[in-house]
Image: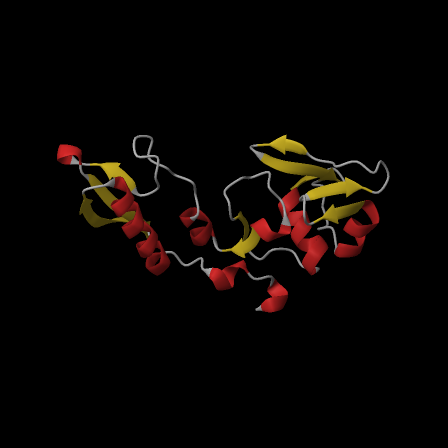
Amino acid sequence: MAVKYSIPNQSDLRSLYQYNPDTGDMISNRTKRPIGTLENGYKVIRLRGKDYRVHRLIWMYMYNRWPIEMIDHINGIKTDNRLCNLREVTARQNAENRNTVNAISGLKGVLPSFKGRWKCQIGHNGKVIYLGTYDTKEEAYDIYCKASLVFHTHNESSKKSPDEK
């Protein structure tokens, strides 16, 4: 017989933990210490025999609802669970925010081209869009950043809490 798990509600979480939105720590009400272990780069808490990613529990703790899709760490650091670094996004938006930096240029979307020039490209809807070739990697990165405002769907309004929408 399979074990059924119920999703913890806000009052369950608040009876067990305190959350510090400035540090991102979930603190045990019993031990008064930050809790969680690392699993695949994310902080995880075991609750009633099931592991939960801390950033998802924080969403319930703060907004009294389970995230509909995904919670994105805006700065790309999986352990940074400060409230200002978390936002609810679609899977596609989350993929757009991945920190995939080119090893040679050190910049997202910028790759070396011929004769010391730099090419720029961006991913959108599963395709790579060529944005041109430029004399400096800084120029190419500037174009990438402008294109990301057009092609990537996460924007300033997506950083707002559910209460502000």
